[in-house]
Image 1 (cartoon, rainbow, N blue to C red):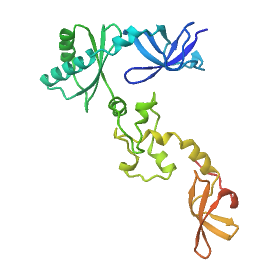
Image 2: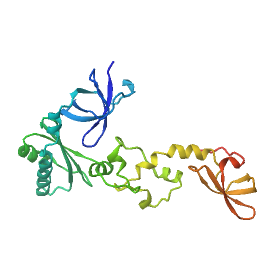
Image 3: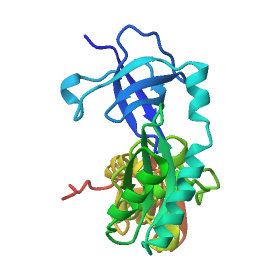
Image 4: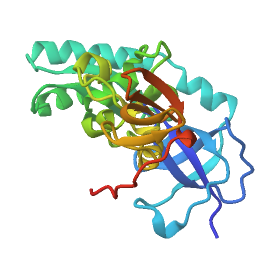
Length: 269
């Protein structure tokens, strides 16, 4: 049975599952992988992946060996910066409406991938031909979406911390406006949109908790019984597990959930 490890490939940090055979690996180790484009580097993030092979949508990548100092030195060369500059130069000459963002060589330099963003479809066949002649290597151009662009260029989120996609996200969660509504957040775009222009990824982190907690709570406008008499729910706070109610004398009190009683109404989806 294969020994499966999870690694983060570069530069987008996608999570890949690999067959490590009998190679002892720990979190943070760098390994050399046998990919479709030749040998490449990756970082181990899950040293013992608990996953069924039948659940994988892609075949396992093979780990060739643990990376050696010379492998890491090759990966730190400045060739990628030169390749990116050449790509920008040729794209400008060809008047291509695209923005080259990052260049990535495999370990032996035989394959170059250039990641770019564009508002529309780009015919880059001429660009590839020019790059192959100039750089003397195989070239692949890969268009990426807004979230992946943010992951590559990095930045600081609304929370004041570095972007989640740049720090630890290996795949992007499915996020919707409904999640913002479920969490009672303002639906103003400047409040729930990240620097990538898409809905904040972090809305997905606690959404299930909000849904589960709200199932246990009365709805705004619903009548409830409190230690101070009958009242009407004004608002709920799922995280604090408290309810703000308006009493019959029109005073507002915030009370713990366990101090209230109300008629349970089955919620229809």
